[in-house]
Image 1: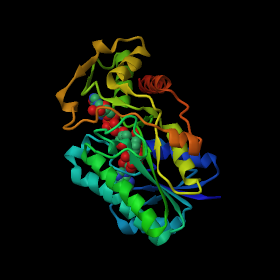
Image 2: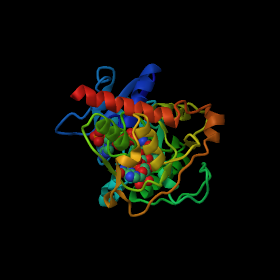
Image 3: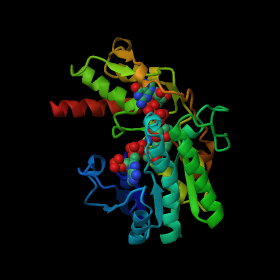
Length: 321
Ligand code: NDP
Ligand code: GDR
């Protein structure tokens, strides 16, 4: 039974990846950081099937100890400060978690589990102010936020450790992926949660920033399979993962409100607080390398994804009444 170690197991992707690997017969070990509460809501249904170790991306020794304790065959480094807007108010912390944290994770692998295969959660935010569309593995980076800059560092340090130490280290450049487990501050979930509350009479409006930004949105459950596939290849290489379709935040609102027969224009208000100091206007993936080499294709469409998220938020709010 192979062992997988997941940092960020309590996050959206960590929870789906844990399910995916358990389904394949893996022993799954997750890293959690100390908290005064137990914020395991996304993995509550899995806690008796996985092992949890206490460690933090800020603490090198804890990562080495975790690696030594479980001797993983595969390491998925998903932990990060992942909210772009927060990266302007906490740029140093974002650099520590999202940038240098990758080096700490790689050092822990090098010291305690050098034969383990390593996955780094890189991001389409590295393309930022895009120099071409669609974006592929060969597109140059132009990050537009402290988060994007930190991810570029994490990306290149992964490449560097592969080349310096012959580690099997890959970087998945993933475009936005969402689900009913998405954090409430991200725009898809913010909108679908608001749609549910408005439909049930619990709210009257939702305040958003830039409605013209365009993203390539897919379903998180599909994307964790791509992560796993990358680590099963003969050679460690980097891959772009996305759907190849792009929609604006306005179209997202149209789809989400439309799913409950409401018109978004009656409920969406624009608010300066949610505009960013520097915006990423357009992202759209060219996933042809992943299609060909990994045999990976997204299975859930944008429309079905938004409907799934609206349904889940409606059910949750109905249950809470
Ligand atoms: P989430 O924000 O849902 O999860 C982040 C995880 O990181 C949580 O488990 C969090 O733990 C953990 N974490 C944060 N800081 C630390 C730390 N110092 N030490 C240990 N753990 C820490 O992110 P997602 O699941 O959406 O994303 C997973 C990864 O993929 C991230 O690296 C993200 O940047 C990247 N990514 C995501 C994309 C997306 O669209 N979702 C697209 C491209 C890349 P806690 O629960 O304690 O807060
Ligand atoms: P993003 O996701 O920054 O792409 O990063 P987010 O959902 O936060 O923003 C997407 C776009 O929507 C616009 N927007 C708003 N965003 C939020 N959060 N709240 C609003 O009210 C709002 N109004 C408009 C934003 O300006 C932006 O253009 C996500 C994260 O998961 C990263 O960790 C990951 O690396 C990238 O996706 C790929």
